Image (cartoon, rainbow, N blue to C red; front, side):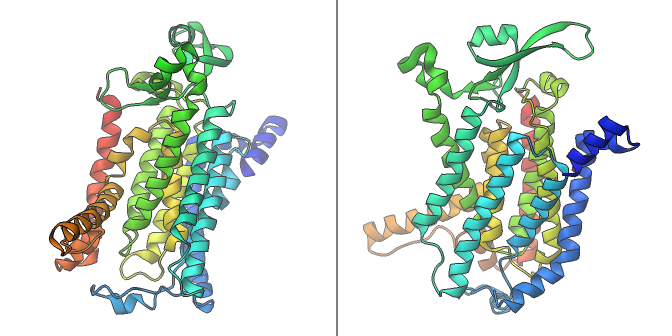
Length: 419
């Protein structure tokens, strides 16, 4: 809203300072500050309101240190995160941008899904929303994200005319631009529809999902690529949102890891939306994706602000309202900037937490069938509980996990140049 207002004032009245809102970096910085302010200054009031509503975490008896104190901690703090993401995004981002609109929808969608799950847990004495309904909700978001990115006119990449003809991309429209920037050379650039994504370590740095359908559909494979692309998007959204949900088991872990991942995705979005940097790094130039940087900045500020209250000892838990939302948004942003294949590296903490549960359950069932008695790989899953059972304090576990997450984030950025 402010973006549109100041853009109008700058164009119509040349208002001093209004032009600042045309800069992504300025709006991103402002977004971080506003989201931080919302969480920090409104956090106490939101927590007090949650307590008045008696929305208190119902902890299972797991035999972990500090378990009794956590039983009295309010949950659904994810509402703080959602508020701190949406308000600055609506104020500072271009609300005509397809990526911004899709991310706002994703935030509301996953927030409502997580809220319903938490509400049923806390008020109905149940285990929450039935797993099949939760999965349906995640599948629904994946379907919306995948379909929009495949069919929407503005979800494109920009290539040279030679690249367009060589790969047979569907051109949506074209324009004459100075390319490379500052060279004085005018080239025809095509905005094309393609399911091409960036791949780390490969020399070409590109992979097109349509390639898998070429033996069946030939030159028309790109028009049928949704058969593979949309189901893959659904899988990524579901997997990452569930992994973030599993990671939210000790104070500050999910919010801290999400902040690091969000910051990294913001950097990648900035590089992908900048014609010079994308060409230099050999990654796809994605027009209109610069606005994702604004959203990522708000995401980062919201996670850091939430840590003010969620760091040990936590004054509030995010609940599924927050964890499902954070995971869904991370997946959506990665897919939008065509870096979804980097998720196993960037979200390595989420991955190992998820794998620890899968391995624990799978091994337990296998040994029970084979030996008549279930055996375990870890003392407890997810992995952070295993370390707690080893006697390591949860603050040290979180700190070490965050250090590893920072290392993975740096490695993710390095992979862009390493090919």
